[in-house]
Amino acid sequence: MQRVLDSGRLRGSTVLPIRGAGLVLERGGRRILDGIDIEVDGRGTLALMGPNGSGKSLLARTLAGLVAPSAGRVTWAGSAPDRRRATRIGFVFQRPVLLRRSALANVEYALAAAGVSRRERAEQARAALARARLGHLARAPARVLSGGEQQLLSIARALATAPDILVIDEPTANLDPSATRAIEGLIGEVRAEGMGVVLITHDPGQARRLADEVAFLYRGRIVERTQAARFLERPQSAQAQAFLRGEIVV
Amino acid sequence: MQDFAGAFSEALRLITVLDASLVEIVALSLRVSVAATVCAALIGLPIGALIAMGSFRGRGLLVVLINALMGLPPVVVGLVVYLMLSNAGPMGSFGLLYSPAAMIIAQTVLIAPIVAALARQTIEDLRQEYEEQLRALGVGPLRAVPTLLWDGRFSLITACLAGFGRAAAEVGAVIVVGGNIDHVTRVMTTTIALETSKGDLALALGLGMILLAIAIGVNALAMGLRATAARSAYA
Image 1 (tube, chains in turn yellow, purple):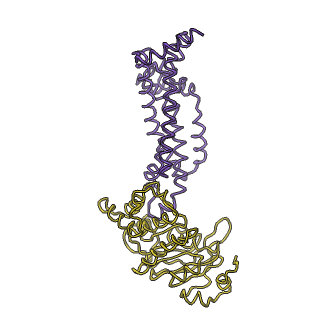
Image 2 (image 1 turned 45 degrees about the horizontal axis):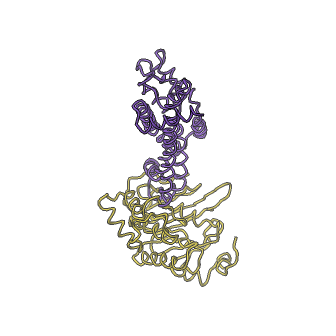
Image 3 (image 1 turned 135 degrees about the vertical axis):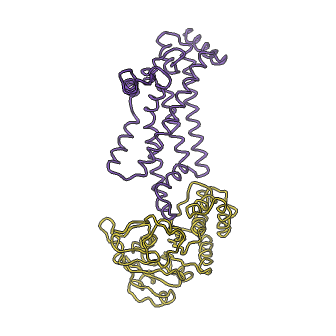
């Protein structure tokens, strides 16, 4: 079994392309990922879509080196995932996990973890907050921010280290349209700048707005991977067709 | 009844005039309990962090043991420390028995498990919450420890205050290893026990009031800290 994030010596070097070969993940006797082969080259936005329990989030976590596969192998730029390159992947969780510190200190912490010198941290952190339109909340305790602001802060924190790729797990789940617009706007900016994005979403509308490509998962397998427009207009698999019609797919 | 009223007013007088004997006893009590709390924090916090962060064989048993040690009977601790420090004991050559140092050791043994157990719980809860995020930031277990200690600081200070409260109110262990020697090892709790048995209620009552005030003050401080932390969502 592959270890999660071995300590490496390649701080700063790229993680792209991220490859998963024969990925199997079993939890409690259940096969959640069932022999997935995937490559993420970091060009454009890849949306991982599929019904609940299809393995989207765990696939993203496995590719990011946060979960060790039961079988198969993940490589970052051809070598095993390592802790020193972890911040080359900006990972944003569905439920933001924010440190019990100010918004600014949360971003500074990520920069410190990425090896940015103390002198440069404050300036870079302020720039990251300003980019997420959170500059005015720099000194506010992170955990008193609204749900949308907390999610923007976790994206700002992930982007502060200038990662090769942003992996973002259902960023707008349970958020109102205004917060959704702000978050999608930020993802759109990142995308326009050429940073690769892996977006996990249930929402075909969001995939239409943000994705270049869609990989559709069903029961731990990728049943279809194609251009987003093509997928949304003419899905090939029966499961994807049912999913896009809004039917309950289990 | 008149005797009680007289003792009460004499106790108040001793406090208001800052009676020298009373001040000496209170100062020694605070010195011993604060020192024991610092020692217990230096021992208990790393042990708590180690257990919270570690995944090793026997960890569950260690957690049960540390939790059980929170209820250590003070006289048993006093007896064990006495045996260690007595002339025939392994630390007898240091000549610490019947000194404030012996009392500090006994109180440290008594409260270190409290600090360790509460710290373990605090850090473990926080670790579960932060674990995946810290891993996503490339922060390994060793580097995570200071992060968890800092972010859990309000709860950890409260754990130390709980230890201090237990130390300051404790009588069984310090009377065994300290001997309650006048001007040397006489602290508030041992003096209250002694003066009450002698029927000199004024000093006992005065010290009792101060001890109660300290207990209330420590609890108020702990509550204040938690309230401050909760207001800023740092708890």
